[in-house]
Image (cartoon, rainbow, N blue to C red):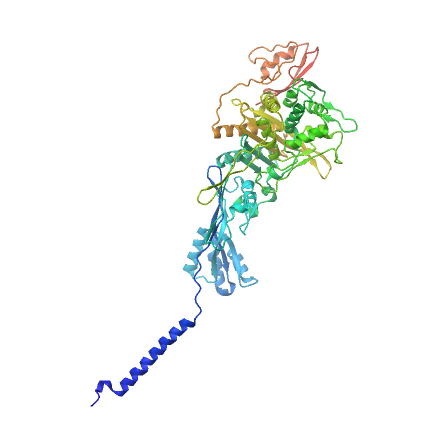
Length: 623
């Protein structure tokens, strides 16, 4: 049979060879797939998100964000292309093109960071330049970072996170274990907890503006302000000036980074007298009716005398606080046992950390009789607020004992801790400490503070329509180089508690090394008044112009009637100069009137017996 020409031997051979090659190629491909190592699965992006920090109302104060690090591989950029690359990047990243080119040319290796922490806008601009100009050798590395939307607001309390994602200061440091996400390799995404502070950002902002103005006006070196809820210990405002911008923390100064209320130890001055008097009264070594005669100096055998700014004459404990009399306080201190007095000071919390949730808190320093620095002058000096070192937080916590009937409350800056879904993990609850003084003692000292606000050294802090109690202080700062107290550097301060009838707020302000005027009653008390008004209005506290029912122990005279002086010196506080002028015509009493405005102080004090040819000095100021 004859073979068809289409199926010729040549064609069959060609197709056979082609088929064999095809089969061989397929077999090789399968073999390659079989013996090729299995590709690793593309890993999913792992999210490790640090928790946020918020104020008590939910305002974000610290949050994780994304930034980019811009790097270059010098070998991938031809020398002739480097000027163009530098010119394209310079305006975006804020570095001179010549500097960029120099960095690339002098790079020690084949990798160089041009700039870290580039924001999203800069990232997009760089990407556009890379695409438009075909730039080579650049890389944008995505990395997590911390953003502080309010910049320097409550800076020391919030703190700061370093490049490694670890907290370095403030709550960022002290609550690192809560804020940091778990490093769990079995979980694709992990999230840190959200921390809610007790701080009210709105109130904090208003008080920070006030603090800045006060710093500028007094030309002070630093300033502290702490405002706390008296019944809960929650801090509403926490100011330490100067302060850093948290978004530029690396360029801030050591002075800006200091958390003064927690870590700065200082001698508190006369504000401390409220705790001294509370100790004397509570121990029963003095009572409210005891009288101490101030002649301007308290003499100590073998030691330097303690002086007073005035000759106040006979004073009760209330009047001693009212006029901040050193002599009278020193006399009271001699009636109490050294060890018992120091024990009472420790019970108020001095010499120990408050335990607030902030890092590196100092415990202060309380001198004791076994110390080589103890002398016959130590106890009366401590009673006046020197030879003892405290922190502002200790002072506020001790004041909470006076506000709460003798029981101090634990201070706190943490309100809540929440997980990412908003579930409550921790809620702050007030924690009262052991009774320090009797309720009657606390109430008495609080009433003395009210007297000081109405007609004493704290008159400039008086709010008027809400009863407020204050105590002012001015302390010389010890010069460690000269080993003596400075005659030009002072710590000026004022403590306030209000409203008196049911204390809600403790407010404490300290101004350090002010220029010019330094007396706490003159430069800090007015700031207390302004700050108290801000707090009262912000919190919506009722203003009722309530008249205090506490008797001051002074004889007052109506200011719309002629002044009549009988057996005792009346209280001239608040009298205008024009009402005083007729007194200059008296022959039996000599009046010396200093200044203008209204009477802010007098010597001798109200209630002193009138004697023939006595001299009464009245100091006036515009209020």
